[in-house]
Length: 273
Ligand code: HXC
Image 1 (spheres, protein in one colour):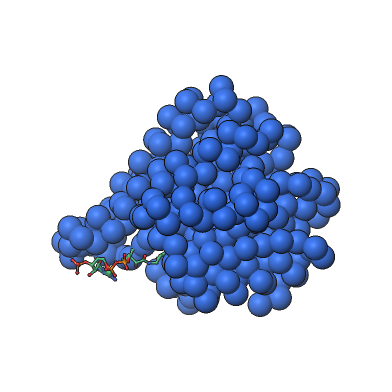
Image 2 (cartoon, rainbow, N blue to C red):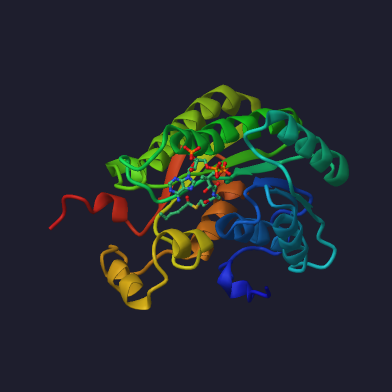
């Protein structure tokens, strides 16, 4: 689908900011991660996106590649982040075809809206495995290449549910708390070796497939939701892409072990009048 540049990127960044860099993105066909990737590619990077659904992943890769003449974007479908070997092969292919890996976005996530009462142990495990083990596998499989990069960065896509707890999202909240925690340890272990690690925690984002499926696409309900956010609006994919560009740019080089919440201040709202 053609997106105008204003949909996913603020007009303040330099065109060749990421020239020569390679991004490896899990969940790269999903709305948020595909827009993060789109922004990086528009600003000069090449990318490899990973997904479970081959057709969707390959189509997203072709679509992202259109944002810049000469951009190389590989889509590797049929790759489940729960399977280490599958990611290892994907990382090797990315490095071979694109010349290395400089940036990693650990974005693959599982989610269903379900109460604790209705949640089966296997549903809980599925989300923990995708989000936590999947993130570990992503870091582990790409680290050999990141360690060779002159400018290595990792972003973990988290959420805000675990800062307060969230009905129907107990599994996701538990998983994302683990993702934040894993990020902190990787930041301390690998910061001294030149790899920064930071979390981006999106709040409610208006224009994602996941939000439409899991929350609502009803305009009145979304408007009501927006009014409860301190900035008075829902987030956009551009908010997340811009935060990504900042963290991966040289402006973000001294930020390590940080959780960047991009939610208009909503997570601080609990307890306010
Ligand atoms: C209750 C469910 C369910 C549902 C599946 N399960 N869907 N339980 N309600 N709607 C149960 C199954 O019955 C099974 O348990 C277990 O979960 C595993 O299901 P599988 O289909 O076998 O697993 P799998 O194919 O691995 O799927 C994992 C999944 C899936 C998490 C359940 O929905 C998924 O991966 N979705 C795609 C990724 C995704 O949703 N990404 C969005 C992220 S966006 P039993 O006991 O029967 O074996 C995001 C932000 C959203 O997170 C913010 C807004 C809230």
